[in-house]
Amino acid sequence: RADYWFPNIRSVGGAAGVLAFVLYPYVYMLARAAFLEQSVCVIEIGRTLGRGPWRSFTSIALPLARPAIATGIALALMETLSDFGAVQHFGVATFTTGIYRTWFGLGDAAAAAQLAAILLAFVFILLVGERLTRGRAQFHHTSRRYRELPRYSLRGGWAALAILACALPIILGFLLPGGQLLIWLFETVGEEAGGSSGGRLWWHTANSLMLAAGAAAIAVFVALLLAYGVRLNPHPVARGAARIAGLGYAVPGSVIAVGVLVPLAWVDNTLDSWLRASFGVSSGLLLSGTITALMFAYVVRFLAVSLNTVDASLAKVTPAMDGVARTLGMGPAATVARVHVPIISPSLLTAGLLVFVDVMKELPATLILRPFDFNTLAVRAFELASDEQLRAAAAPALAIVAAGLIPVALLSLAISRARPGRAQGEVRV
Image (cartoon, rainbow, N blue to C red; front, side, top):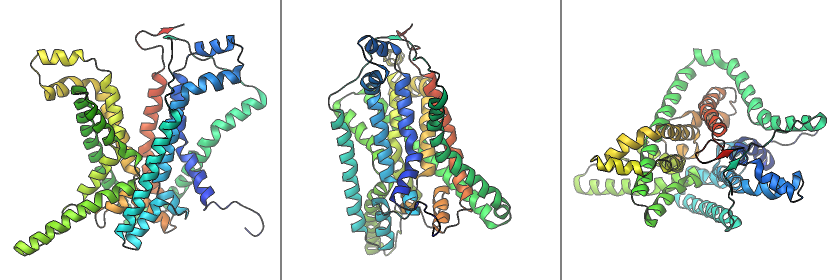
């Protein structure tokens, strides 16, 4: 550092840059899907009105994709607000790190709850702001005629710039860190296999898989109940309750952990005091600091992921099937089990897979609510990185990455297959 200048990566700018390269797929995937849905017909109408390629893009294509882009930006902002591991490793003080330090470092639960309330207010302002910026503007495709956008062949410097723009996020956000983790893994594989770390890694993997699978199953089941309940009774109260249930994804994990732990601890303490006074026995911690509390926090946090997927798939099932099932003497439960579940089973699996991956990498809620001496891959990777044992942290980190590659590939394939012109009533020209 004394001989040459190099930017300080452990700073606000460094953390922001890392999070940008990690979270850009939120915007990219939604924007890509929105642009794939557009037909060249609307662009050609703008060209006939005297608009050039750039003005056609900014005044037609971009507004049509604006809701999707705004949603992606909002998701990235929410993930940034709730991030704990990256900002903690980079030494950046945020609300999430402050909540954790106040709770466990200072032992002040009241102050941690106050910080959580302030962070929750920021999230609420973010959601309201996104809604207000959109206003009442709505963008629709006015025709069912569809023709794919033409592909342009770039040459020379423009082609090189396009390749660089597409490759840079992948290189900096995946290939470079992934390659370094692989190098560290190969350097430590002998040490891990021969020592006790290898056995602990298997236990951490088993814990992560157990939590992720259990939370995914519960989240999909609850999402199916909520979505079908709204289908049976589309009352505004029912719709509002379903929307409120899906707000957990906008709330950081540390805030949800505090919101779960405080009332559960009160219940445990109240029950323990009553048992001591009445029977002279202690119940201990029955709810707080258990797998039950952790599962409950996961379901609250990631229910929106499964609910949106299940609701969108269930909406595509014609209500006529419900009527046919009723004429055959089936009740609501039998209709769901024997009619709807077989039809929407791919979406149910997709929803479960998405929740599974989110739980695998969830850190702040796990750190706060986990039972004593209970580690997951995310917690183990964070602990090793905090102790600057970066080489040892490669194995759990790569296991989390491997779990996330499958849904990313499936989601990208689904977006490519869901291009317009294939739906009923659409005309390809």
